[in-house]
Image (cartoon, rainbow, N blue to C red; front, top):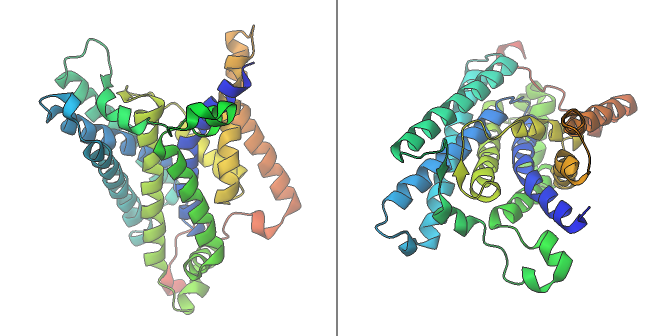
Length: 329
């Protein structure tokens, strides 16, 4: 097994999961269980693709592409698209108090349908011979690695050969960990997730906290979709190409016991488990599919261990998935 290539690939696979899990941890800390994360990541990806497509087609010569515009336009489109879906989810579950499980699953179905519709439309506009669209000019700016990566041997190959979105994912996870554990705003948010009635009585605006956490969490998760398309897939969009990465991101939340810092290392572990079958010679198709289940198996084991130990700090928020009715306070 080529360990350098394996660890490098594990990080690439894990970054979308890290974005999704970090966004979902923030959302769940407010008491909202958003099972729409797979759909939101899908919307974040296709929104960035739409922005990149419009920008590239506005150029007479793609060699004249401006690095700042090529990066910022898809980035803002991705954030806007995932924000809108987060607002829809928040309106349904916080304002209208709809069932969070049903709403989340509906958002996932909607997000995948939304992505496939607009992805298919863009493919038709390009008259492509294959069912995909390539945005290599824009992707080139996203995949640029640090210039010193080639000079530092295996360390540079593993840790410094990634695009800026990979490092942004780690920074966001660290900032989120500090926010949740070291700031007053994080304390208020955790209070809302544990006992919204008590938080409301203490003067914390429960609905605003839930809206902000869910919408910001959705925007973070949407960046996972953008990373997948622009970095992992080198700017190539194909319908239904995401696979089960959105669900793996939700599983990573449990594996990380709702702690963004652990999610950083968990994403690399999940990424490695997801691709390890490629580095084991002589496996048949059935064995490969069984090995692909490893991230879920590990999550179940962690869930059992955490539940058995019954440490409160390792448990989900007490009010997770429950709508708050102020009149029942």
